[in-house]
Image (cartoon, rainbow over all chains, first blue to last red; front, side, top):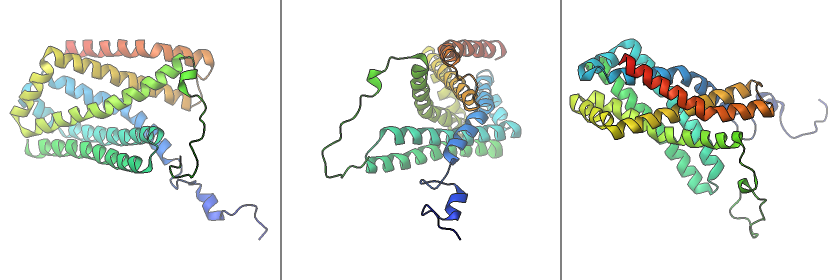
Length: 130
Length: 132
């Protein structure tokens, strides 16, 4: 084997994950969820707009529809992942003290996970129990 | 930035305040602020679904809140912010694929953004008004 000019192992180089060890995942997921958000957001807010004219029983029946329920669950999961990635970037850009940054990044994950869980709980309850 | 370096703070170069506010810069800031607004606004949407699952009282609470004039104004502004962030994001996706990057194109696309998002919001409300 020839003498190498740098200290990185071939495995490190071929994985291409860089210093943060997660490569371009953050960038890629941000774009992927952004593109998916366009149709999913339109469905979510179309359903909410439709519920204005339906009253309680009609709205409940609409949300209990399996196609609507699954699409809305997908919308919430996608939106919450996009929110987590976006706010993470804002925190990393503006918060420079290590302790506060770590705390806010944890809070960000907890908030986004909480919204996703609340929405999924509500949708599953509406689908199964009416 | 290291916080425990044994030296006094290094001098920093001037930042945002020295730049002329150009359209793409203003829309970049608007994109970030609108994203932060939507981040917190989505809590209302999640709580609305929770209220729907909790029964008729929850539904009535939300229809009273957002059926009022102030509630409708909040909903309208929220939907404008949403469309603004959506169109801004699509603009970023176009740039990501290497299109519309010239100075004139990116400038006109940025200047059109607030107008286009407002038009889209009004059209969406008109469609909802007619259909619902």
